[in-house]
Image (tube, rainbow, N blue to C red; front, side):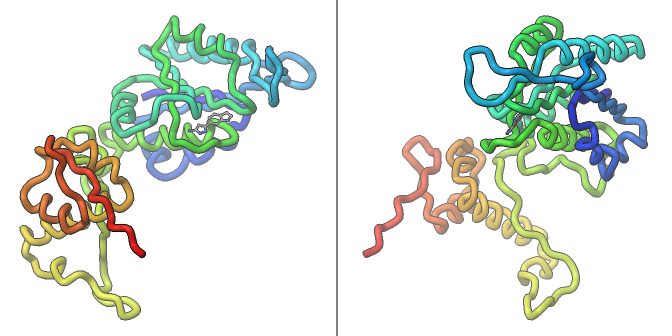
Length: 273
Ligand code: JCZ
């Protein structure tokens, strides 16, 4: 997969040299090109922003540097034999970035990221490139960053680990919590390793029992416990067929009960005096 990133802070993308993404690059699975947007400015101050039409606070990134940068890197990529680019634009008003979208992006041969600063990029840039390639405007969560670079790192890491030959067998992602095919998208429960006792804290006995059936059930119960506590929305949107009899028992213990349609809704907690 080829990745291009255009930014006014190329050094912000240094983490792409490290760890999993760095290894994917070293192994030739990822071909990453980071570009400085200011290379496509031609005035003394390397201006990339201007005041917004219609007034209001902040500045807007100008069309011309983005257009020239994208035209250049697209021409270079095609010249090098790449095809099928898609534009990925981080923005808090984008489509939520999920594991499902990570899988979709991992199946594309070429991603071009345009992390903005200020109040974002003049809309005509996205409109222009949307006539030439798929455009994904993505939000990595409901909070406001100062710019899109951190979102590029997030999306890149989620995508890179899905590429063939990037993850080893030991860290295979077939049972990821949010894998689209998963029966129920439950959060993972707690994990433990040696030593068996640490500061007076020991390991749940069942994990030392060697009883694989009981261990699987315990893990499932802990996953249900965590998911109801931290992500009740995941339980509510679950296909009821994803819950077996033991799941229903556990959900009941956790204070959940089925609606007539089979979907789970949290039991109303008694109001305390
Ligand atoms: C440019 N501020 C680009 C994306 N999910 C999310 N939160 N915040 C962003 C984001 C913020 C930005 C820019 C200026 C993306």
